[in-house]
Length: 117
Image 1 (cartoon, rainbow, N blue to C red):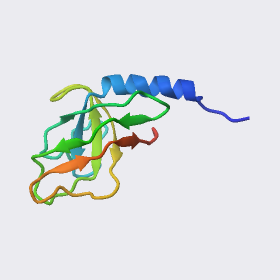
Image 2 (image 1 turned 30 degrees about the horizontal axis):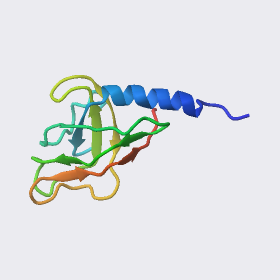
Image 3 (image 1 turned 60 degrees about the horizontal axis):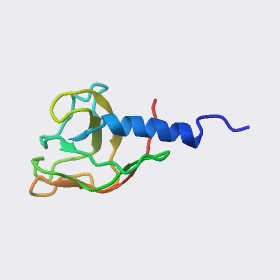
Image 4 (image 1 turned 180 degrees about the vertical axis):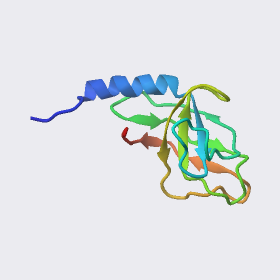
């Protein structure tokens, strides 16, 4: 018999996190558990979520500016506020892991997947 949460429970959980995770911060390396280490110079940006399913899905691209020109961009963290708030955790970015020459970076819309540890 399979164990774990079913789709209904995962959808409730994803919806609860999406309701609180209103902003994102980019990081130049793995952040600490408080989200205070390795934050990029790019300010936090607001998030737009798709309707919750068992996954969390960004409904639109998130455009960041103000990062270090061609500097590293390896992780994205979720926050409950634009400038303070609670740090909810982070995910490693896949694909391109550097700001462009102008210090911009785009996180494309799509499903965020991961696990707790």
